[in-house]
Image (cartoon, rainbow, N blue to C red; front, side, top):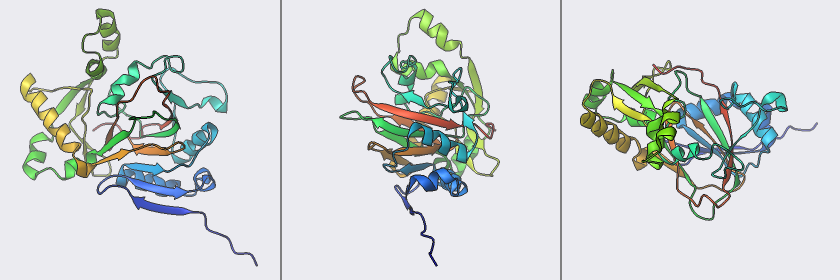
Length: 284
């Protein structure tokens, strides 16, 4: 009688307080059999790397569906695959007309701070690499809060921060035209808790390039606090830098991490394909 052979499944941590690598096969990922385990690792470790898994676009879309509800890009829904599509992350405006908007991604951020319920997670695959640079940094905002001194935790719990998309765009274009600034400001702003009290009972910091000002604080005092907390959260013990290989796929918990891309030549042809999971929990 033939004996079933277990599919490959090797999980290793890549940094002390963030990140795991899962070495497996396409069949295991696409079956959904390990979806619950993948979600548990994602929440606990923040980032999961699937080294050189080489999923096609259709396979990445199918894998995304095993983990939750597929999230579509704002204002975009393509024909085929029931409207599901990958989103190209590139500085080439002939591939992505919104390439300039993506320049905010070179600074620490959480996706979806203009929404009350941000996306749960992003999944990104490497399709073309830059000869130099283009790594992606991640930091664990759960661990960063948990390791704060108790008096500092008490001091910041209950604080609220105004977030604005235009603030993040000023990082890369500090002197926009009036028309550009008006277009960015058309996205509005959103007031969020500095400490997110998740329904799981855990707490994480809500920071990043969209953070404009702590409500009720003097501008200088606010900026000092936000920069101090960003420095704290992005320390090496909370961080992981992923150096991409072709075919790598990385999944990260957008509700408990921040991320940023490292600089690279924008004419290099670097291309990532991204899918996302719809948010399941509002900021609170």
